[in-house]
Image (cartoon, rainbow, N blue to C red; front, side, top):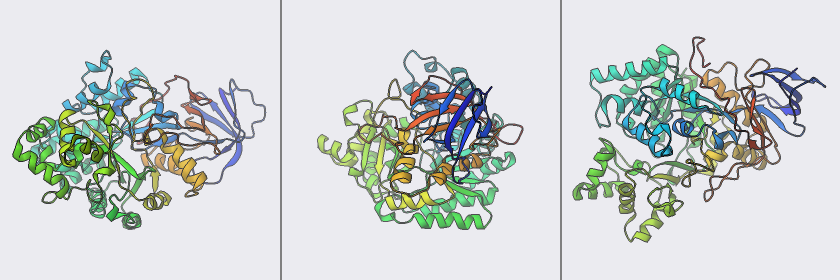
Length: 539
């Protein structure tokens, strides 16, 4: 007798081929059989006629490492069909421990949560804690270069000494040996931005020893985006490692239309033998921290040092001017081709009424210039201000989405419409990335076929991560499965009301256990941490 039988759905197996009518049987945590199974006995039957049965969606680019510790239900992700998240992106990871990461966790966790007192040492400790607390979906970890750098040399704007570089390499080795899948960089964020290409290559050479992946939020996504993508490719070529370009885009109105140029860079690199791919979220707006508009020198030394500079009249005036004018060797990529009306506050704890409002509107209310409003917001929130920035072209989003080497990744976090993670007005991608692709870009706009969209959400990222038994509907593979209505699946989260779950995702099964049943979270937490194992792949 099967544990679970999904009967009569259209199976899209994650390969990109056309769908076919079949039953899918599950025993324990694996797919047991696919075909016309008739009246085969099962403890539970899901009637899926008129529905699509697909592999669970793999979110290859997320920032859920701390939110999942706080709330293991993973509500905003499993409700849209995600069964695996890759965390630790953009150079920021929970391990190794740093004071900044500890502070971030304390800000997220409720006052009475044990996490307020917990201090860890490494990624392995975080993996173990996540398993101890329970999680609804599977999780894989990257090591953040910025976190490594902060652990070894603080937030200083300088190159590492020879001894510090060796310490960075050894610390990376420790994290990889505990099961991390690779290294991420966030080269527009301090302190990762202070590294030159040689430093990144030296660390990527450690990845080659272990056969792991290099992922990068590249050094610029505006005027210098082509050079930034080329740098990521250079790292892959020199170190001999696979490269994942994170959330590929061209930002700023003066860069609209450059999507094909970036895709050509990737194609040429692959023709030259560099294993490079990319991911993308399906929106024309990005989300980041407000500190990203400040010149790099203003951020050196961490938040305290930054606030000290803002308190100095001469340095404050220079920072304010460089926000719009840029600095030597730093054109302020976040403001190029962008106005203060395009930047909206997503999270501001001291005054939530400003969430959802633009910097321009807040400045007008305060009676100051927008640059001064930026500095006041950062001072009042101790540097902790999240923003949304409308700066991309819809045509570029579509062009990049169509490319066969580009997969879907939310760049969001596991949030919830209730509890401690329901704060602010975050980017709706945390709730709606996958239903938006399926509803808007597949059903309504026909940018992708449904089988190809499913491949970009499942089989392609599974291949990229080296997963041997996930990402496909194949007998013997792990039973991570989503059942959805192709006629009604849709994002319902909006910029004004982002904490809203999607429509049309009916069943989400993780390791054989329903986590979403008939559109409702069951409370189950069958997720696992996928560590790189002795088999040479995550397990």
